[in-house]
Image (tube, rainbow, N blue to C red; front, side, top):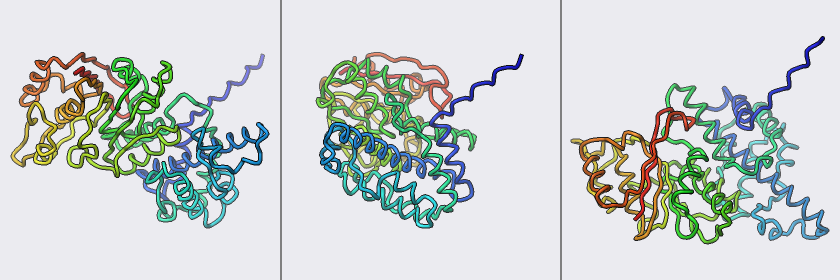
Length: 385
């Protein structure tokens, strides 16, 4: 009796995108993969949502409004002119000027949708001078992906996390920036309950904390319009990803005028938040102490500094900043390196003052392998002012 053939393993969206990116080998540096692919993925995602909305407008008998921008923006869908639509890109995928057409498409979306200001790459594909055949092959792979099939996940954040993991594995080391798993974000949200007020993340990455927080509010039948979101991100490309990630979900946020280092160029100097949710990079070193002193964010003193007047480990710098951003009834939940719970020296002094303040609500130990790019355990800290 013949054996039945094994069912084909379904390729995940992440795997499909990596396969797409790998086609660029030899034309683009591996470190550029995620930026090349995620911007195209955004274009495909925005176009798929546009086409779905367009079909709904026609099905509802309102075809005369099919090019009325308001009929798209009311449902948090970007209106796309012809040159920004994925179908147009695919029609021209084999043309020698396809890189210019992609750049034009992205520029036009940003121009027509002010919420995307500063989010999309500027003249990026033309500058990279990607081989036309390889770029066309990449477009073919992305074209196979149903970008709106999975409605429950932080899609761009998920892709970013996966790409970071691939780079970390390829280079034999972890990266300093990584996306926070949904389970961790949900636990933090459940404990601090950010239903109403100001929510801030001073190291917001691709915006995953905000996305999952809004989903938490909606799941508990709260009103997301009662939450004001503020964030800051140091890396320019990640800052752009965060703006894309939030914009495609209709989440309004103030991420500052530019990508900037929270320690040295605070974009929200006067902010006092109701809630802090964050996952900062662990064990950052060589932070100039002078700039941190002048920021006025060290209520429990300066972490240990070396002879070069640098902070050797910024974990307690982050902890102090999180505390200082809270208002008189604020709550914070954040991820921290496990070593922060028993580090010595100046860190120990700060920790002792924190505990004596009575505002450390709880700490939770998290085991290994919760993050793609970090295998070490971590801890969750919670403040209740």
